[in-house]
Amino acid sequence: GENHNRETGYERDSQSFALRLSTAGLRYITLNFNYHDYDQDNNVPDTMEKDITRSSVSFRTRPWKRNYLTGSYTWEDIDRSNNDAESTLREIFCLSFLSKPHRDVDLNIRYRHERTDDPFVNEQWELFRSLQTSEPTRGDEVHVSLNWNPRANLSLSPSIRYEQADSS
Image (cartoon, rainbow, N blue to C red; front, side, top):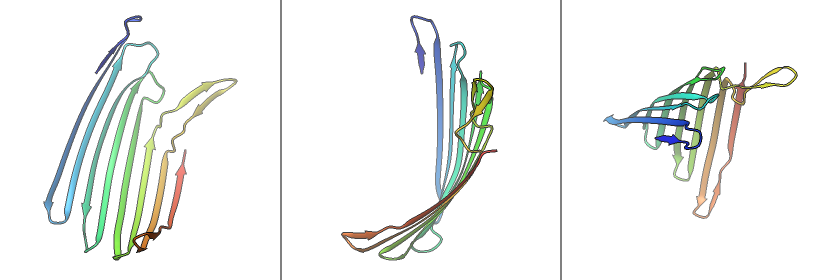
């Protein structure tokens, strides 16, 4: 797309390309491959231009009857100009297990690991130079939930979530 300001003459151009490939070639296994590229260019002074490339690989399988295992690995590369953090690399790994041990009970266990190299940093100058970021550089999350439906109009759904994040 293109955005043109008639008063200042500044232009902002963006291009996006996406590709997805899914296959179910093996019995009970589905594989997905995703690719997305977004490029934003502009001639506005003191503004940031960026190029974002995101790719992922994911799978879903049914190892046993009424049990599902899914996993994904995503990486995202953000290149910037006119910014201190010239590029950011983010990697995300997810693994989840869904089980139905009984006809009224569902169990869901999920693990997520995220790592960010050189996150986007806001720089502030007051009395001293201050660098601030709202993104952790590493995070782990475990989520366990249980759903019990003894009757059609009654359900009990406890869940536990543990999250640990580091910024170094």
